[in-house]
Image (tube, rainbow, N blue to C red):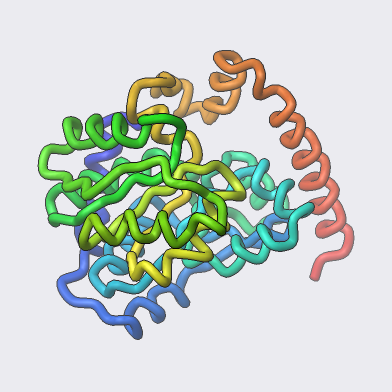
Length: 280
């Protein structure tokens, strides 16, 4: 995202930063969010500023919020995996991370106002957290990528407090050990989990409330971007919503995963056609 746009979004979100919040206020705010059903998965109709506001309120209120970043691959996986679909549909916030979801919602007339990419939302939250003194923890990734991502974030956002970073384990039998490692870091306000879908969402669903961490976000391969291990698409490519194509060109082994996009498109078109033929 261009720096100008980051500043514009942060300026809008600053109005939403809470001075005081409680669970009832937060629940009222959550109830006002509109959402769209995309082939069985709830996607919240939020802008960057609104999503950031929800996260900042959650931190202030100390109410655990599982945050997911649905895209067409998520939706296709959720159609096959009922447990994953249930986790997504009870998450506190599901941002419209994939442009395919925005297009699919538009076909039905429901509409999603903004394509909110998880990577950019995390960067917005990092800038706000550096100002507000929030403490972060990075969990997951391969090897030492979480530690390298933590160092890169600290350098990019002076004042950002990263309490800890570790690979951990997505397996349920290792939850107690992973929780113990996170608790040993002290207070944590934001937990990024990078195990890939659906492992990271299932982990957050099982563990976030026990840890009493306000914001837990499944971030997939974001640590690779932050650490510099994998370059992110240039800004002009992201503005055209072709980041998925850039990733495919640079990582051609992902072609099998991209087949899900074709199936998603076919299902979305079919669903939209049925809605138009049989409205209501």
